[in-house]
Amino acid sequence: MSRLLLLFVLLVATSGIVRAGDWPQILGPQRNGMANDEKLAKKWLAGGPPVVWERSVGHGYAGVAVKGERAVLFHRVRDEEVTECLNANTGETLWKQAHGTDFYPQVGGADGPLCVPVISQGHVVTFGAQGVLSCFKLDSGEELWTRKTHEDFGALEGYFGAGATPIVVGELVLVNVGGSKKEAGVVAFDLATGETKWTRTAEPASYSAPVEVTLADIPHVLMITRYKCILFEAESGAMRFEIPFGQRGPTVNAATPLVIDNKQLFLTASYGIGSVLADFDILHYSPIWEDDAPLATQYCTPIHQNGLLYCIDGREDQPPADLKCIEM
Image (cartoon, rainbow, N blue to C red):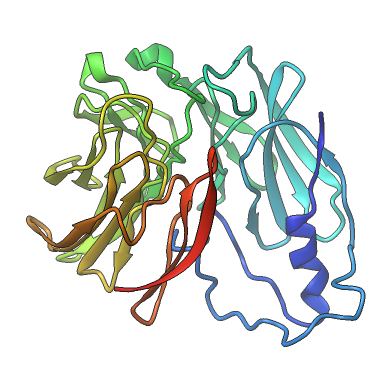
């Protein structure tokens, strides 16, 4: 069954009132769900925002990445995962590339990709449900390289397929591949060539997207794996610290780690795992509180604003879930 691409179009539709900014990766420019320098319209037209265009799309849960007048869609059409670049103003297809797939989820869910495309430095990076990592030129769609990470590093597909959106830091693409048997839980690839630059940890993969944080003027990546939260130096892969976070059994780590003022981190998961607020620096972390009563979210990443957290608390498969605002 096809879906209609509407959310992005509605954002574009309000452009006569307010210009929607770039959203080049999951959760926006800083992966925190915040739009930079944006102003919301105080009210909509009586009939709601007008639809500028709409189109049918394939299977999957990957959101659209937007840069300038280009929007990149990643979806499954029949037996192919398709990366498709659209004109953001018209919905017209500018280019598309496809790779074959026979993925079928172990536990419900969709058979399409989960990971939002990443637009960075004129490149588009996609990560499919069977671990196919690809890089294309944003302007032309030329395929620069592709890696079959599950085959290369012996990773398992997991319950729903690969679902940890990669992150681009400098000239590297960092991915929670989950190649446990080859000490390739996390792998860094060269953005230009796809060459493996480093591998670290035996941790299996999660469904959480990592975030970049600069500490002591050095780019780092904070990544939640299947059972831990780990701070890596991006260029070298040096592991600064790791926090136990997760448990065995039918559980999922899916929310993105939240970095607050570059000195605190917030982690949350359901399935009895709960939430952690901690102080941290380049080498250490110190929990402030740990609890599952205030918030334990299954998939939703909290939004932080002025000392408050906004989030969905609970599980999709065990309703009800609640929209909460929590004082830190």
